[in-house]
Amino acid sequence: MVHGFRPRLLDSLKGYQRATLMADVGAGVTVGIVALPLAMAFAIASGVKPEAGLFTAIIAGFLISALGGSNVQIGGPAGAFIVIVYGIVERYGLANLLIATSLAGVLLFALGWLRLGALVRYIPVSIVIGFTNGIAVLIGLSQVKDLLGLPIAKLPADFFSQLSVLGQHLGQTNGWALALGLGCLAVVVLWPRWLPRTRVPGTIVALVGATVLVSLFSLPVETIGSRFGGIPQGLPAFAWPALSWVSAKQLVIPTLTIALLGAIESLLCARVADNMADAQAPFPRHDPNQELMAQGLANFITPFFGGIPATGTIARTVTNVRAGARTPVAGMVHAATLLLVILVGAKLAEHVPLAALAGILLFVAWNMGEWREFARLRHFLLPYRTVLLGTFVLTVVFDLTVAVELGLIAACGFFIYRMSTLFRVSAVQPEEAAEGVQAFELYGALFFGAVAKVEALPERLAADCRHVVLDMNRLISMDTSGLEALELLHTALARRGVQLWLAAVNAQPMGLMERSGFAAELGAACIAHSLTDALDRARAAGR
Image (cartoon, rainbow, N blue to C red):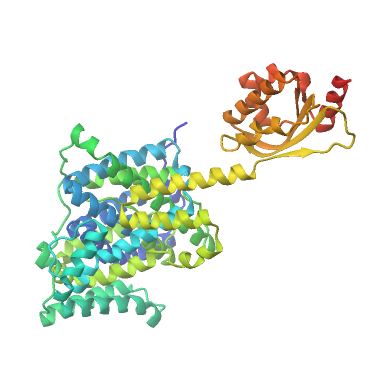
């Protein structure tokens, strides 16, 4: 059954009051100011022009708020996409990035429409932490070039190649750039501690301060104007990308990567917002399927205006909640605020030093990572450690797609092993022993990873055994491999003249046996309601 398209905004506007409007406007303006430097920094770090980040924050941010399933989630370019976008631009080019983003939008919409939003929650937390920390490391590494003011035309996308290139140019460090970058980083870190109640974000203070210094003293550092020629005043015109079936086939992996990361980030962000809202002033929890459909539409439309991939952004969403947002109107105001800034002050952005943006992004990368989880690994078992560290290393050394794929395979392998060890076939000693009757209890889930324990059961039988009773009261589930194991056990026992009896079969295993015909083959008389009943029938048959 498909999911109906109903944005949360429609419900939020019912009974909308002036007080709510003022709260949303105040929060939206605050988030718009916070988003300004981040949008430009994310775009530059992704290997595209700064206006691409601003256009994404405006267009995608407006659509995600207006059409999404969350009251307070803010959409736009995200730090998690930096490494992905940079790699796609490096390997496939900017035009193919736009195509992959639109295709990912179609996929995201389909996931929501088919009610598959909950599937994202099946990704283990160890994988999410692993690739999040890996992306944070790569973001930090990508900012070393601008932080040090190194004269490198373009960094390679490969981790080890980046280390090599940066190492070769360390002797050309620009002291002014390093001082500006570290100064901005210090301001962003210390500003909330100096003025904890101010609503002016530290990123804006750092950015404005660095820009004023560069303008007044003509510091020899690279700026947005010197590298990109400035930012246009106004939104770009609609442009249809050159889409072909050949290019679409080449972009399958980038499309899946953008869609997967976008879905994970947006739904994780929405859950964080729900938890924060519950603690402050509760409102309805997000609709994951509606949120994915909104993310899909935003990512499909934004590339036609020069935008890059967008998703839910935790930092801006948290700021939105803390600023008092109550409805999606706040997110729409945030987009309008950014548009106003472009229309009025685009010329001023020419003097923004790239080292200042690098300092801000270093702070973002640090906050993005869950570094305490590494220290906590000693408290967890080997499977959790292996998946988390493996995903982290693969994200850094290879890419996110490989990391998530192998992480899921490893997590599934460990889960199968764990479930197989939990399944037991234990001998049962009945109160009244009967000659030729042996009873066993099946405990856990009988699935393809545990069938060997059932297959080995005939080896545990005494030479004079003529009846085997299986107590299935604690067998919670069974798959077709488990069913086949029971059928083979029944056949093997029959060859030896041994009758199989089943007792206390639960609904799921019983339904599978009935649909397959095994219950009819075994016979209703051989399936008892309890272990005692089955033992009595076996004793009676043995007389």
